[in-house]
Image (cartoon, rainbow, N blue to C red; front, side):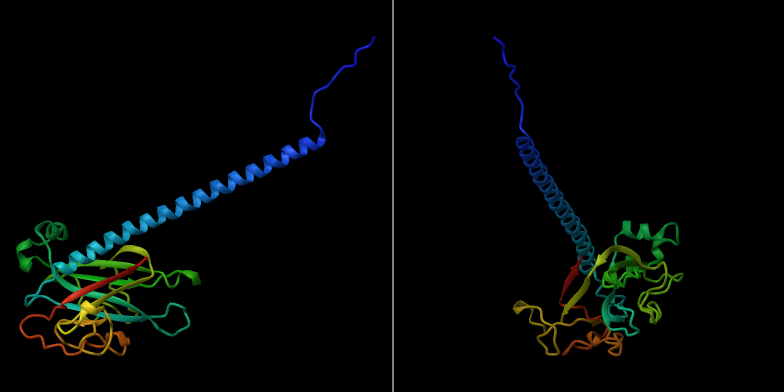
Length: 259
């Protein structure tokens, strides 16, 4: 009697089915990993934006909190139009703010950097300037993304141009080279609203021409420095008293920053 050898194995159909199921499983795993990496990347980006935004807001809040209200004080906020879409017409408004604030001994020593003695600078006052400058990129998708810059200058310093000088921001709207330094890039919008003594802010911050409204510009000495020819946002607040021996400071300031 002859014995027939038996063979154990898979048919071609079973192999094709196994390969198909394995392919589906691999694709599902890859999609899961890709989705997880995308979520992780967005979360990390949002975290970074929150950290940067929080740091910038803290700097701005500290500047506002230390404003000088005496004879040497000043606040000037105005708007400049820029040609972001490169069509030859300047129509995009961007804000710039300048003020005088107190600075502690450590800050004054940092600014001194081996220069004249600190006693020559009255009361430890510095000029601070913030400005949103347009992107220089040729990419149309990045033209609306600006760079936020800031600078400090000791009041009374003779070697540098005052931030309040009419020529500090040239005709192009750019500051004197080397005077302001980048704080952060990727800024979509930067804006400060100012509540006057007559603004009704407990019902909401609203821009407008009436006494209860807030203002987008500010001139602490009522010298008509924000030019309405440059931008309609430079219109002076309504119902403001005249500054006499001391500058007129805003009652409250609202800061808007979009990254």
